[in-house]
Picture 1 (cartoon, rainbow, N blue to C red):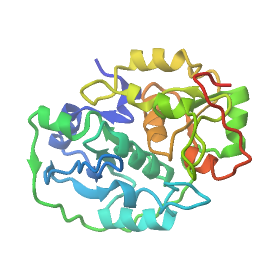
Picture 2: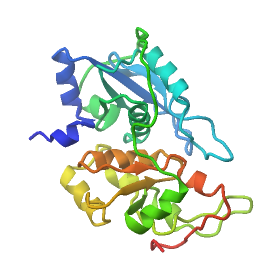
Picture 3: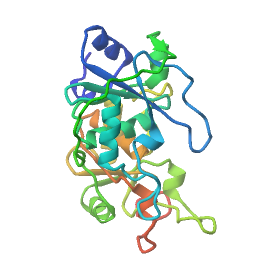
Length: 285
């Protein structure tokens, strides 16, 4: 059974391969990363045949800033330059994937959509799902033909600290971090405060996926987000630690037809101002 809403943002390995065999105009970006917490390198030297290598923590963000947070949005000029080097074009379907539950691929998806690329999709289940399906891989890096694409930022809804409090009062503000970070508590000396934005509801991004790393079925996503009030009747905003897990949840919501804005700086930006309130504990307020 097809799900046209889901397929606008997520493709299974079988769907992607069928599009390739049908001669569709597709550009595949492999989003490589090293886990910033464990040091695990997710790149094994293999990639989907024909995929272009990109780097999660340099290609889809600016350097950390004391005022903008850990992972600010990249400058649109930088995104455009990289998009040209990768050979991206507006009339091509862009498919991004990673090897870590789509956590970094979702950020790439969001940044490329924000930059004005209309048809960007994430490979559901990423490289592990592609391997499990027995589909072609390569250890040879792809050398793309550069393009002359022009990009402009602002094509995805986003919000900042003032709008966050407004969303919590009159809409739905979701915190995509794991529960311990949401609950917070005492912070080590010299470290930023722990907790959450007042009124935010805990919605950990890892809950978006199954044990196999693919996004859970759409009915489950609707139930999971619906109980939090994200059912399409109110505006929805998502934040996380620094704009990575939040993009994952924006993607999950898009897969069930719900538009959600993202706070790019997220918690790492919120805590740069000591006057912004911080709530601890398991409840929103």
